[in-house]
Length: 265
Image (cartoon, rainbow, N blue to C red):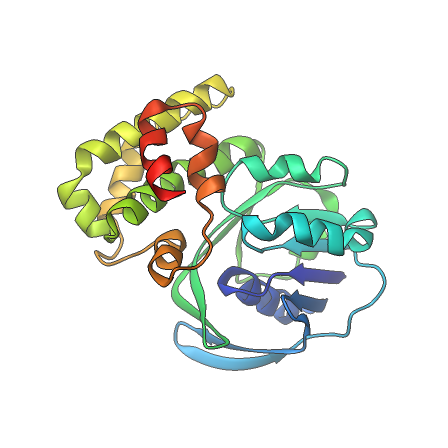
């Protein structure tokens, strides 16, 4: 199958690499145009991968940019999006409305990977991709035996489950400029209140996350103490952040969360 990946950062670069290894025709577009090669450090191995030339039409376009790039991406690459299945793989909830005019499928991904000095670093074996069920997407991953893929019967709930975790810790880590372990040691009450607010908001959106609070707390206690969300790293570097997508969406519906958002935006 012919696949285009837009946004070869830590997530998109690694994802494009794995799709190419699955035997597909894979082209990659970055901020400076077509990307022909990437170096991947995948936990315990290193490899350079070559991608394919850009063509006129693709079966599937995966978008793995930051949310603040979406408007420009949609405008610039509209011709590709109009003639393909579009799969945005971003953090958050609010961005899906930007794709209402396209044939899009929802997705979310769990992965610890980042891009440093042009090299994609996959730091743990974690890779778990949840996708809205679709025949074409099943074909894409048919030969990707080493990837953990779930074709979800309730993709909205799966996306909210990830959003529950990432919005809470991205916000609190960025606000306090501290990693996960410190947050759990020193701000557990705020973690629990933040989770409760997200669960309440999700319920108003028709999503029941009542069983997820304990799971998220256990997950946070089991990840490395110094783990940082990409939003905190962006704040530390003075880069543009995804605070509107990860915190602002919730801040409109919660006075408690809005207090953090006003300080971070």
